[in-house]
Image (cartoon, rainbow, N blue to C red):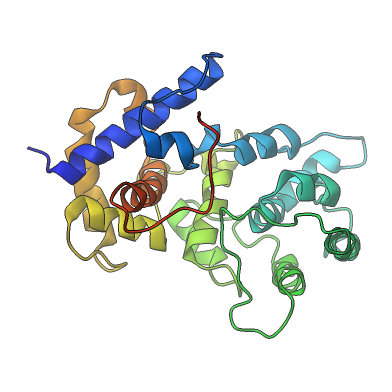
Length: 290
């Protein structure tokens, strides 16, 4: 038998997916009677349905096959770098200006020079550079955020093949975290993009379904779910048992998309839902659902 909190988790998953379907079918607002879900922005159950992810899929391709000068091969070789760029900024307008990094210069030096100019111009014009969904810090370094992001990318450019021979998502995640500035959560988001890229070798990784990496939000979501302290140390056991418990409460249409990374992301959203519902917190991102 589920606890009240666990029933709320199942409810949130079903209701969020229902909102997506109604919205995409052209139904009028409100798409849910739940006041919190009418007013607060929540990511989708399936990360591939999120707005920024869809933009990346439609605009930054693997491989692009743009011309006869090796672009197709170069795109594949530079795709990891491109996905790190995509998730550091996570803002379609910024990414459209930066353009997908393709490996015409061995160390991305031309792309990085252009990126430095574009970021400076956007800042001067008061334009948005980052999407607030992912928190990007300077890791304690006393420097502007844009400079730190470029510093991180310059380090990665020296190791562009960092995950090329990885067989599992777990291995790719660990490799990415050896780059200064790529912590577990952001590295996990990059892995999610890569694993869902058709024709990428990791699209068929043996741990495609079971891999996930905790972030602060998902740990808090699991604490709501289990009503006990969850840390990185007991995260895997907690999410394994959570999946085992809720899989009997969800239809196949949901289970088909609920890999562990999607479950980890929904735990993060569930934390936000529970904090706002129980008036123990608030969300900065509002949603025009009414």
